[in-house]
Length: 160
Image 1 (cartoon, rainbow, N blue to C red):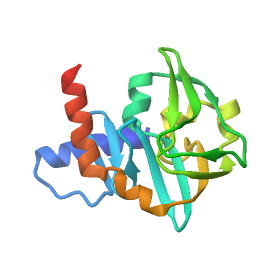
Image 2 (image 1 turned 90 degrees about the vertical axis):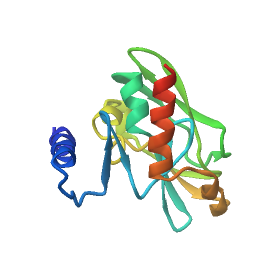
Image 3 (image 1 turned 135 degrees about the vertical axis):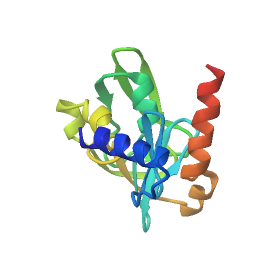
């Protein structure tokens, strides 16, 4: 609910040409956070040293619809950039989740087992999927920043 108010307020401020000091960039009904990196398969990654938190984007969860199940990898599993490490099942479809970076899974979001809807309600905070100890931090250079990802989503949506 707070996110809806924030999006409304940000859109209203934009129309009124008022500067909004949020780190949230609203694009249609989906949000893109500026301090994250994005894969073209619609996963996000937040890097903190050699640790990376990974989830699916607001854009992805919006297209999936209500998430009803999340397949999580095992802690200790090795993952590679661009490879599937799990799946998200919604009322519309099941989609593989791809890793934006390579490394070892150090934590999974166990809350998703009982509350998979966290991905819809809070894709960038409570709906994160895994945490990874990265094996090559330079892989993040291959990912998109917020402006590039926003443009990517707009172009992708225009095709459909």
